Image (cartoon, rainbow over all chains, first blue to last red; front, side, top):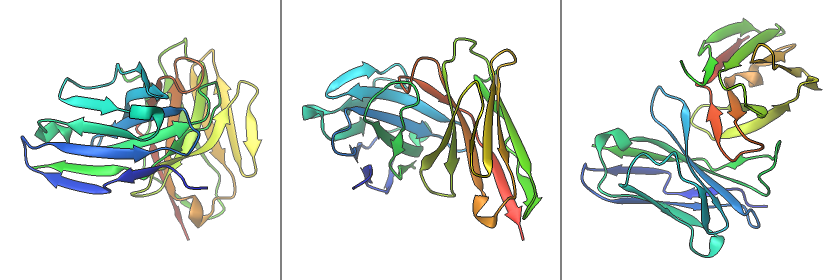
Amino acid sequence: EAGVTQFPSHSVIEKGQTVTLRCDPISGHDNLYWYRRVMGKEIKFLLHFVKESKQDESGMPNNRFLAERTGGTYSTLKVQPAELEDSGVYFCASSLQQGAGEKLFFGSGTQLSVL
Amino acid sequence: RKEVEQDPGPFNVPEGATVAFNCTYSNSASQSFFWYRQDCRKEPKLLMSVYSSGNEDGRFTAQLNRASQYISLLIRDSKLSDSATYLCVVSSRGGYQKVTFGIGTKLQVIP
């Protein structure tokens, strides 16, 4: 069974540019999450989709970040325009259910560097 | 104060040793608790969920103390392959609707 896949694995862009990250969850997983880890800090929750709907986007830093999940399959996270503080590792995760104890499967992350 | 506090380490222990990590959380309404393992430059992977009654999986034992708001992970007979960062994860609601990660505790098992 294919796991959660993320693309690209690395992205280096200049401040002010736009970057779009993609996440393909495990097939059949309705729940999709985005997280971010800034160097030296904890992994932080960004948002949670249930199918194509945003269940919780309280962790999104600001309106430069836009997440979509059209059709309830893969998701994209766009940063426009990127700022230096957006650098970090962006993880996507998916789960079948959202109940207590439900296992989260993580993708290997996208390392974003904004110069 | 951070919502989930962990000692970042590193903990350097010899093979065969027993090592314990603690994690404290500040939100008394927290409902679900987990330990994740993250290898260098890899994604986090669920190691085990943590229940009030305590749970064991081979050499790993996890405990939850709700009164004191801390979670522990005990690793017995450490192996070289146990070297990784161990993340304490707490959910304020059931499941993963919104989780908070600790910064992780780095373990290095030495031959």
